[in-house]
Every structure is written in C-alpha cells, then in structure tokens.
Length: 300
Image 1: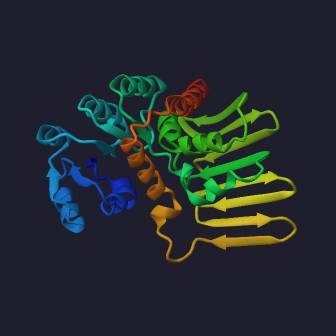
Image 2: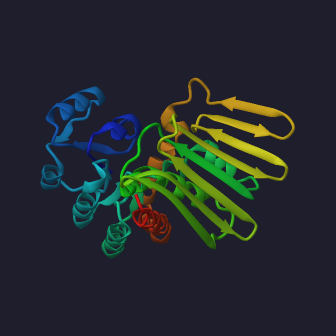
Image 3: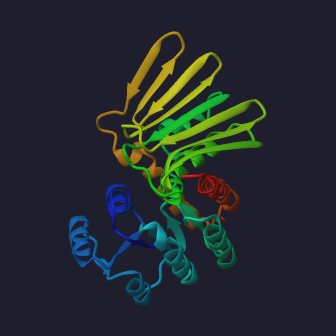
C-alpha cells in the first residue's frame, strides 16, 4: 500500500511518523515544502520517497491512502485534492474549522467512494476505550489550558473538539438534549461548558483557557463508583478505596494516547474499502459549530 504523509509539523513528528514509519506493508512517502525538515526526517526514518509539497507528490505517483497534518486552514484544500486523485484520506482533527466545509468534504468522499478518516485519537486510547465496558450514568471531562484564550473558532475546532467527540463516543445512549455556555472577553473565548444528556445519562465537558494549568481529566460516576483518567496516563478507581495506576514506563506514548490503534484502524479500513462514518464525523463538527455560534453571540 502506497501511503503519503503530507505536512510534517509537530503532531506529525511526535505522534504519526513514529507509527507509520514502522508499520509493515506500506510504502511511506513524505511531502512538505520545508526542504530542511524533509531531508532531516527522511534520513532519520530512512524514507526514500520525498516530495517538495503535495502538488509534487501527486504529480509523481498515485496513493492508496494519505495522512494530512497541515495547519487547520489547509485541511479542506489538501483533502479535496487527495480525494480527487483517488486516495483514501485521514485528516488530523478537525476535518475543517466549520461544519459546512466538513460536510462538503464528507459528501465528496462519498461521491468518490473513498474512506475519509479523522484524528480523534481518544476513541482509541486504551484507558478511554476500557470505560465503554463500564456503567456511564454521569461523565465529567475537563480539558484546561494555561493563559491561552483565543478566537472561538480556533479554541473549539482545534482543541475543545476532543472533549465534544470523546463525550459523544462514550455516551451510553442517544444524546437528546444539549446545553451550551461560553465566556468571551474582548472577542476571545475564555471558557466553554457543554452538557449532553439522554435517557439515564448526562455528561459535562468544560474547558477554561485561563486556568493556570494544562490538564485533561475524565471522571465517570455510576454504580457507587468513580473511575478517572488523568492526562491519558493515570487511571483511578474509587469505591471506598482509592486505587491508582500509571502507564507502564515502557508503554509508548503513541500507544497510550491511541495513535497506534487509530492508524492501524484507518489502514485496515482502506484495505477493506470501508465506508466513511459520515454521520458520526458530522455530528461532532455540527456541535462544535453550535458552540462557536453561541460564543460569537456573546457580548465582549
């Protein structure tokens, strides 16, 4: 399988390249207009197929699959070009920074008959996946940042989208009610809280961008027990006795944070000609768009 990685920024280097460069059965190509990065990473991972940007890669050969790791603003144009060239496409979250653009790309993938995937790695993180076997009557997910207020669209689609999608992924039954609260100061989103509820369950997701810390914490309370995951690396189980467990010292971060399983799942989907999970992708982006519009209506 010929696979292209387009864009070699921070997340590509830390999370995707270490996985794909050691994945058997694929011929990996790299593409970026940053010649220094292209040369360095090609040598580091012994990758021979190097291209000066996406256009050069598409002119040189065809691809069965491609991973897009560019800046968010470039996601739609790059994904569109790759889909038109017949490749299945995986885009690091978000698919686009608006619901309309995301819907357009999903429709294009459907018309091209190509799989379109998105980098929601929490769906594959072992400690989060394990929670799907447990009762989930109440969930609280917090993802905070230190001194990082930003425009509503940037905060929600580039960061809070993980909270939205994880709570949707873990919801034990259909979500029937949604409530949104936002705090905006001088046009910048400082805080956001969303509540998702259905029959017998509800979940709260919150992010404070002026919190004094960078932290992700998920708590699930049900059946007289609280189960917790802190920063995707430490789990807790409280039922009269507080039991905690940290990630093993030799467990790769890419495995603990779900990137290994997520990449493997996407490549398996390409081999199986799996259809795009359109409704699932769009539901997360639709809720993010609702949050952005709520924030943009707030006085600042």
